[in-house]
Length: 195
Image (tube, rainbow, N blue to C red):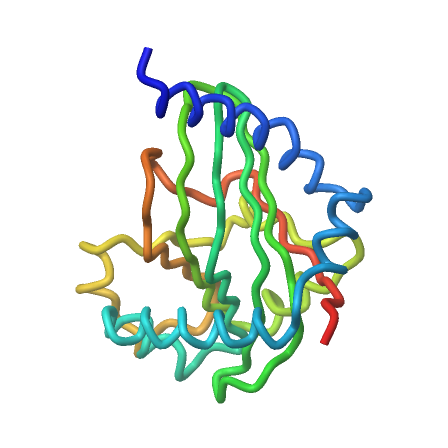
């Protein structure tokens, strides 16, 4: 068996056992928040958002009417039957001032193997969506009925003049071996990173 593939499988299995526990407020989650730098998360999030806007006019248009914009610039997803993903990010207002810092986590089970890195942004178009985020225990975004994943074909035909409700998700900067990105099982939780 290819040594690189063996290494990938071991790394995916190790990550798959650790990341699912991040979906609750356990020591791993608190450790993640304690070791994250607010200034680095802010820089990475601003750069990721600029990258999305440069490539996607629909995202740029949605931003004008958004009540909040989540940006998670570096999500790592790994899996070997059991899988998980995690990363830190920022919620911006549409003027790009910072609302707060957050982490996103998800656990999954099924036919999956590999490691993938990607970014995603969520455009929250109404106050109700923004209020869900700071409720106790975090926001289970994958179960939101008003969540729309914007793919390349849809982005070209997205009519932003009538959009004033719901949450729109954009995936970008994908690297790695896994396919089929979604937010099923994802949870967003506020964190307090060090300055």
